[in-house]
Length: 329
Ligand SMILES: Nc1ncnc2c1ncn2[C@@H]1O[C@H](COP(=O)(O)OP(=O)(O)OP(=O)(O)O)[C@@H](O)[C@H]1O
Ligand SMILES: Cc1ncc(C[n+]2csc(CCOP(=O)(O)O)c2C)c(N)n1
Ligand SMILES: [Mg+2]
Ligand SMILES: [Mg+2]
Ligand SMILES: [Mg+2]
Image (cartoon, rainbow, N blue to C red; front, side, top):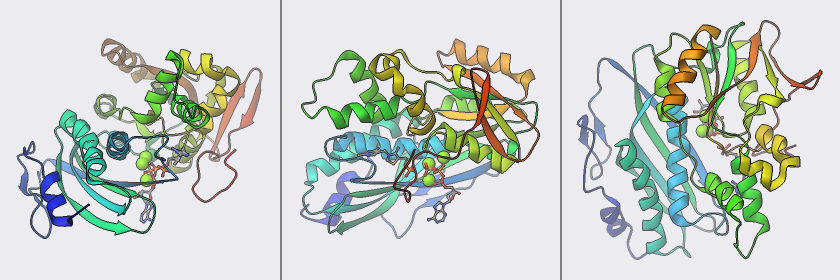
């Protein structure tokens, strides 16, 4: 890159979606008008070259898309609507300007879908790995937010979409250097590179009186344990109910359950709701073409997650992706 200020000029959005924006890119900080009837939601996630992606697993466009998607997913997990984003990027010398603009194009694709505005960030150089940190701001109607601590005994446990596909897609990418993929492999790779944040489902759930919710970044085992801990309840998940895609079964059925439980990066939603709300939500999702599956139940007791497998029951430990543990399984 030739010039930091010239770069910022190029990534500055030409169009603004949100009428509550007072000042976006260009001053010392952004200014947003606060709506009195809404709560603000703010989250931040980072992607690091070598940890979250390599040049072999993701193109610059996909890196941008996914860096924004994972943050929108956290807004969805609160039941909210994403509105603004900020991007901090640390750039090694070997990345050229075209690649960097491509990262921003990937973010813009998703931002356009959700009518989000890029309102600021930071640009720095770094010695080695590209690092991108995105902050997303969202909103939700007062008192409608969906917390991990909302689960109660008697609830059903649900998950959206299918799980494990992203980890299987990563496996495909890491074991096929020539990048010639079968149709099945292409489906899994796409799930890894273009996860779909479940904002629309989060909004449906926010209309219910009480839902606990989490998005799946580290795997079902990890996220279910987080809800069980925050709510001080017991989760009981039926292995046979885990929604597995045809693609994952075809690619490597013997590892599908392991990827579903511990793989992560599916960015589907897992949560609980009272039994009485299930039929209605299932119908609403079905009408809109969204998959949602009942995978278990919640009961009283000291916090834990049980996995029912045939006639036996095992403790499902909080294993999954962990940045500071060498062995993840
Ligand atoms: N370095 C940090 N400093 C301050 N707060 C942090 C830091 N890292 C995480 N948190 C906070 O801890 C909580 C849990 O964060 P975590 O990153 O585990 O959730 P997540 O984004 O849903 O998961 P993932 O990062 O796997 O997508 C959030 O409230 C987050 O803002
Ligand atoms: C090259 C490469 N190797 C491994 C992985 C797998 N991976 C990295 S971070 C993460 C959990 C989510 O991260 P976070 O907890 O930071 O949200 C997972 C499953 C990958 N995507 N690319
Ligand atoms: Mg996080
Ligand atoms: Mg999350
Ligand atoms: Mg997250």
